[in-house]
Image: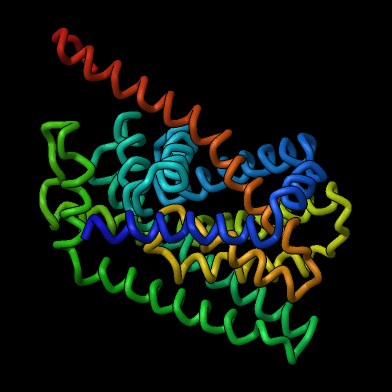
Amino acid sequence: MKAIPILAAILGCFVVAVLVVDIGPKPVAQAVATIGWLGFSAVCLIHLVMIVGMGFAWRAVMTATPSWVFVWGRLVRDAGSEILPFSQFGGLVLGARAVTLAGLPTPAAVASTIVDVTLEFVSKLAYLLLGLLWLVHLSSQSPLLLPLSISLAVSAAAATALVAVQRRGFGLLERFGSALARGWTDQLVAGAAVLRDALAQIYRRKSGLWAGFLVHLGCWIASSIEVWAALHLAGAAFDFGTVLVIESLLYGIRTIGFAIPNAVGVQEAAYVFIGAGFGLTPELALAVSFMKRARDLAIGLPTLALWQAVESRRLWRRRLGMRP
């Protein structure tokens, strides 16, 4: 089974190489240059604000825990998911581990991660629906209506399955907790009953659930602002509604291609295919995708380095017999 993600990643890299060769390395490089350092810096800044917002969305489902803990956990989660060569699940484990080291009990870290992921997924449905409605407003006969509708249906099915797992699949959730704890701490999640109680406690706070959902929805919309700003700085004056449709389609397709690590190749091909329907040139579409990859590296690499330093310091203190 481990060979499947590796083969998928290799195939994705091959797709990217084919796209660059087909479009031409020089036009792609020129398109990247038109976005420039100003555009890249603006995208990084907007994305950092989004991460802070997603940290607050995670914090909304918990009580009596400082907000910085969840902002830090979100930074680690996204860095693990977008940079390290494993699935989204690995990023979730790293994020939950980060908030555990910051003082949150392991059951609460696992339960809050599960609920936060659920709320983010449900808010993605609202985001995809918003993109679908705007696409109908732009062109009721667009050929992109079908793929967006399919991605919405797939995301809805995935969200339903995620909720069902929380209600009936506590064995799977317990294994998630064990993966979080294995090799890092002597205390495992104390069984499915503890996790069930932690989830039930979170779900009783309806105001926190609504706040988390709304903040996540705002962050999904803000993701469109990143690309809209980059395109404007590159001289491509797309209106915000069009960019929102492009981005909602992109994330819908990424959901379908979740098995490919970091969506390598999927994101690039999706941008070229979707952008063509709105007048976005292939080279600029690839430039936007590469800009996002570079953004993830610029934010994620320092985050992972800091996280590794925290883990190393903790292990070193344990070896010396000191308190973590």
